[in-house]
Length: 50
Image (cartoon, rainbow, N blue to C red; front, side, top):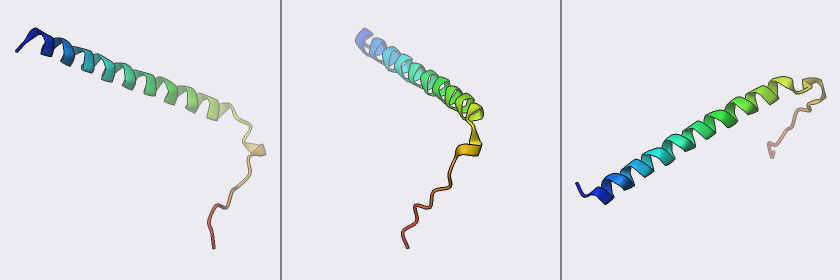
């Protein structure tokens, strides 16, 4: 394989790993914030159009 192709594949793999890591980090942060929210102030929404 040409060296340029190997470099490109490595860069794509690093970008994919970085993106997955960021998504997991934000999912954990979102879950933590949801657990800390005062759920007694939440309202039920009815978005159904009849």
